[in-house]
Image 1: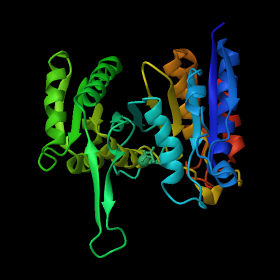
Image 2 (image 1 turned 90 degrees about the horizontal axis):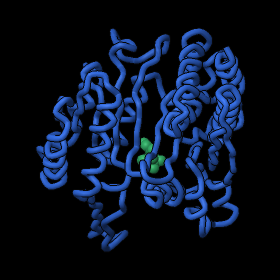
Image 3 (image 1 turned 60 degrees about the vertical axis):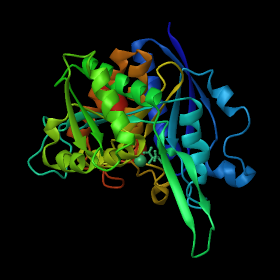
Length: 353
Ligand code: IPM
Ligand code: MN
């Protein structure tokens, strides 16, 4: 029997509640499809930081390398200054484990409300491939004369040929395997960021030469936002840098039904990958059993798919589709018509059928 060791980092806020439901569903899937999951829980997050002053303890990264995958809830605590936990845990893991792809499907399931008038599941079905280890996120730059009228702040975007190329290659391969419109759109800003996106554009068309069956397209990031609202059906796979990918995938989450359903994977195809709901820790809903666990459940589904348990992943996806179309009144916290734990139970019930 296939056995997978999974590190679980439930994190902050509602992270533990949604991850508990995700683990429940993953266990049900492993029972039904005949593989084994071994979960090891880690308490990294805001509470631990406030107690110990430590974000990731020494040796944490080496320790996490022994797992097949990491299942993450949410990082962010209202009593900790913004940036400390995000940089110290989430970004630190993405960088240290070289998870150079952030894969974010934007798929509207039947029966789910989208704020886009006249658009349905046939229109909203694409995937964003976000570069995940470079760009503005590397923390390059600095401050001079802080807290004086002459203060200078510089934050640089780092783009390497190697980093850009491996991301673009992944996107072409993914687009090929996805086998739908077979269209890859580069989202950039070649009209203003003439150094960074010149590198992206040249690399994009270099790599495209090896994929004659994939149609290529280019859109500036501002226009991408416009088209995602106006004509989302034009997209199949979008590839973009770290910052733009961050921004357009929040927009994407909204058109697919909200943070209640949006999931993503931080992938290192040669190493340890990490799967997470993208919505954050939602502190105001913490402990109320009202948050929607479907995004975490979908992140678990992406994890199984990535591990090669395709059938089980498909079954979870089908179960989620049924639950959103038949049962839930809304995907928003507190308005689902069910509690967090009940939604987990509904998915498991469908999974057993
Ligand atoms: C995301 C989040 C993170 C990011 C934050 C929490 C650092 O917004 O995963 O999209 O900016 O990447
Ligand atoms: Mn984000």
